[in-house]
Image (cartoon, rainbow over the protein chains, first blue to last red):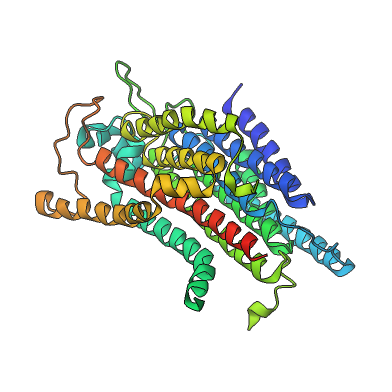
Length: 180
Length: 112
Length: 149
């Protein structure tokens, strides 16, 4: 079977999984349904010839699920049933999103066809990457040699995000220490 | 073409969740869905029909390879996405500790 | 038995046997990042998951003594500095920031590709430490909350 058929199948499962995750009342089931979407992305990366990304996406998905379950599982979780006005508002939102979808079809038509990318800069990396950097994994040669400055920025963003999370969660112990 | 549109539908589902849902957990999940669809779209854009993955192997010579540049960009974007998810989860847990609810319509005192 | 004291004896024994194998696999992924799929990001998460396994099986207190959390925090912030240091050395040796100034070696060998394996190791340490610390702080926050009630 061609790749398009498989991708359509996987994407269909992912759309169903995301709708289920958003509409379920139970929080554990919703998080597990998000797991379907993330692992579907991993499978799609494998079909699209990106084993590097498939490994990383798989591991990060597992880690994200563990974080979400560990953070939210024992909380008593009750959200009121939405009132009638909220239902109308959701209906209007769906209609607006469908309109956006219909108007965006010409934009997607103007993009290059699936399976024929532009490959202007990338062809240079493919031709000279192994000789210039000595790495057999060309993705890794781009991340850490040609575009290492990009990766430095990414490391800084990760550092800042994690620092934010640590700071937010540690306020309590700091106030406690001041009291003593 | 069909695949591009399905990817966009996935993005719109996440967008719908961010706009209409009222509890923080569902909003975090919707942001995760938007991130997945964006990453997937970039990689779908990079695919070349019948091409090989961009990793050289000993003893084999491959002529056609898929575009490695979007793969490198998405690899970093996945990591940042997890960092942001962790930050959002930390904020949600703190808010729950203060207000005992995830419902954003009840977290009014945040306004000041 | 409180929830943060760890799990049963069976889980603890299996964890004691398997955690080093998981860490070994993570190191393999990091060190072979320039030859095979993987690299610093993937391997770092594997190591973070191994630590998380210990945290879930043995509980909060034991993991804090085994892993020395202040050391992990220093490693976490120090790895960003190391990344910049490797980049700055590129200015002196090759003329541009983050240039690949170590000898390239021959293709398909473990010791090849100049600075790429070095940066892979730094990124692996960074990702592993930061992701584990988030879960660690989250668990500590939960315990504090329980104690207050």
